[in-house]
Length: 277
Ligand SMILES: [Zn+2]
Image 1: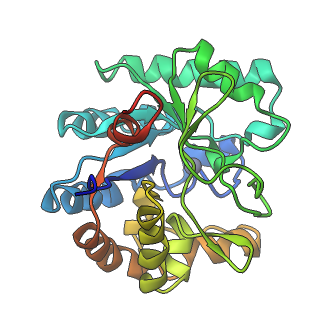
Image 2 (image 1 turned 30 degrees about the horizontal axis):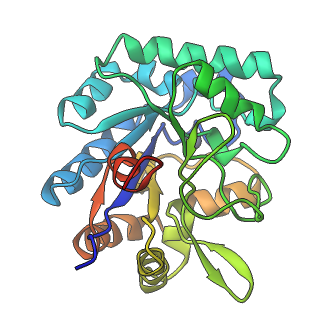
Image 3 (image 1 turned 180 degrees about the vertical axis):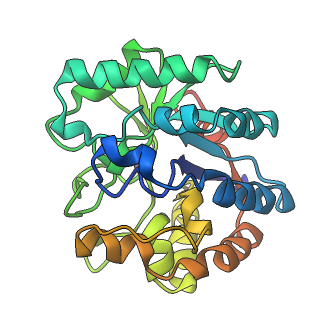
């Protein structure tokens, strides 16, 4: 009998204001809502007996250190989402390195397990900044989940591999899931796509990965479980995806956790990655 495929459940741990391109100097004027969505998410994961990977933004960890300790204490894997939520492709290599080191420094004061995984803000490791993967390896990280094989106005590389693979840097890449349809990669991995597409399409797309013999990679943010968080004045295309159908997240997540098997990114790599026999 074929081995049952476990999928990666990942969380980009940041507050509602970190990923909407506000000036970071205004962050401390924004209402702290991290606990609201995170505690709902932790409850859902506990109900489903799923351990997830939380890619923690360094700035968010400083805002809510006890929450990060609580996540780790429940057995979830801790990875890094960088420190200041910057687009990687807008950074000089040295600035990227400093941002990464700063995030690792913050996390090392909060959790004891070594940090192995990275997810770039806005999935912003795009063609031309593969050097970022070399920097991850130099900082002791072993995997990345940032190269999204789609076309988006902020990110993506539609020519990138869709499945888990090893990069020249030695880092394992775990791409967010896509569904191949009509010659295109459709992003069905989570986030706004989870709220925009019908649930049945998301589930179908994720299960197609399993049918092809690969794990699916899903992602969500704590604020997506907090529909009452403040509405910021941001460019319309940012606001549309950020606030779209937030009330759907919780019931859909409950269904997804019942419909598919999930574990941490590290566990998925252990099962399917290089070295797996
Ligand atoms: Zn983010």
